[in-house]
Length: 178
Image (cartoon, rainbow, N blue to C red; front, side, top):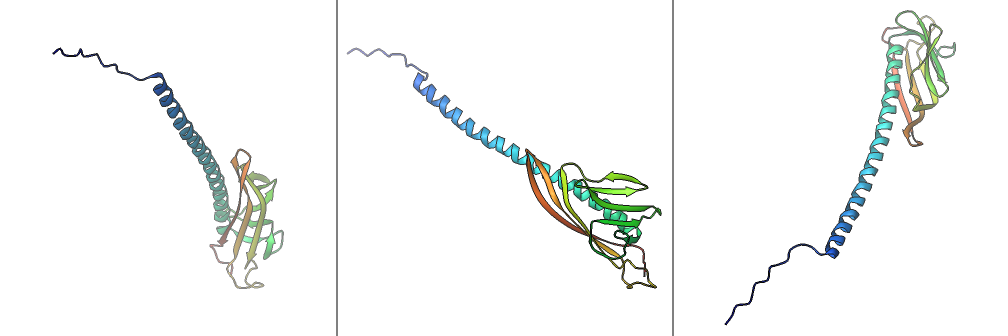
């Protein structure tokens, strides 16, 4: 009895197997790259919103710090106000300061110089001041002066998208006016 000859085993892949493997790989990579690009877009949008809100938060913090340490509160020349779009007071250095809305931005006017407090990515549509207790003690109401600020608008998130916001904050005068 003779033994059959061992034929060397052929190793490797056929052309059809390679085409199927490359096709599956391309399909999986297309799906994953699409998801990756979508995540990048969402991340940019979230960063745009965060940057705009941080900028607005900084502007409001600056306003409330100045108002808190100031005195002689008034809205458009009157004492207490109920929904005015500008607010004036004397800051801790004795300088008259006015906060108002101008060209969809928060503006601070001090020593006849206008300073824009918000970034162009933040569009302010409404700025309202509500002040109470602003009359001095002999004629006044015996309340500590305080101001409520309500700001509404939109934040640009890039690619022509905008997110609306409404923020409310308040400041109470540190010194007494009673």
